[in-house]
Length: 414
Length: 215
Image (spheres, each protein chain N blue to C red):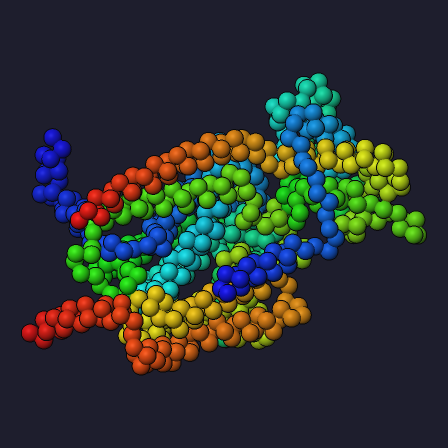
């Protein structure tokens, strides 16, 4: 019966071929570590955010007079409304934890190298879209921090040359953040996840063309690839279990961790909170914004700090595979960069006074220097490593790779 | 070295995040009915004179387990489904204090330090050398010293006030998060299930991958 139904479908739609190609025959390097789980987790969080968000939207009211009360209505009166809302609010932070780790893994193993540039860039687009979605979603509870955060961030667009005021007006739909802003942010916050879903599709098509990277940094021989199912479905599921244990601990026992105290006060345009502070996932970028004394310069630096990751496939000019796994200098640069991001995050969370101002500027300098010095560092590192003699492990990998490349080049010629 | 640096950074961050101008007193909240009931008594007979609790309905007080006749006394002629309003009209409050007293339903969640802040604030009143009343934790406050803490020097009497502040804070903590109990109970089941499920997945993964190692 099952085979007959499948046969009927397969004549009309390549279902079995699709499952084979993408799942049961899809070749995956067997040496992937648990750091390769985070792509799947990001997809899971996206689906969870969508599912909870749609149900929240059934009770939420995007109106300045009703928004705050409707969130309390969800939290208190709607059956399991508190669960939906806390999964959604914790999920926003979890999303950034997961994609930041996913990105850090890519950086560590330099997975952005040829042929995965498009994976890296579609990932960048996804990150920007997720940031926009998170920012718009944060306005919806209409608390003090929602309101003033949106006010400050939309204000930044005022530095656009010539049309700054018009751009701000266009974004807000009013002269200050108000009902028009709330309604349009709600509409876009509902729309964006579906666009993200589409870009995830592109990200996955690219992935299934170039296949997963792996810790060694080279394409493995066929004998070292194993089918995605069942080996990686079970590995991803186990990772998901661990993730859910941590996630649910936050949702059920410390759900207030990611909700600012000030956001439990309804938005009040007449009272400015003592500290206006973005959510933790924007703090490093916020610190870069504040460390440039000029506003236009600050906004440009902040924008640049988010999109500058895109130059990495060109900036890292090495021929050595495997990223930080085989390259001690690149590894040092990686850890300095990560420590610097944490430092920026800390500076961003504090009021900009005293020693924190020069510290923030120093950290900003290190942040950008990493990207601009990497072309020279990576070239020099390769020369130094070759002069010193490559480790035998790496030489073996190189020898494995050369013939394969030669073959493909010969194929191209013929 | 890396690890040391990471630990040092974390410590620095924790210290910096933990600091407030005045150190808050810690309060051990009660979730038992007698504590909540005594807290509710104070809130409904004293605080509601000026403050509202607009997200709490009288019905929910009865559902919490507070005796029906007590709830009836508090609500007077108001229906059970009505939310708790302030007994002072906003205009009168503006006239006497210069501002409308804030709603209390989310007060515990709406301040840095949460319950510890509310508890410390209630007990934070003192008499200035000029004979006026001040508050250590919120110097600009317009609220009078409602528990009459400022003049108290007798430790036994102070302990009594601490008890009262604790009850009020416990009740307000319940009001800010009435589903906390339900959430935690469900949380234990969810985590228990996930722990068992994940352990099973771990062993299943080992079994599936074991076939691979033989090749």
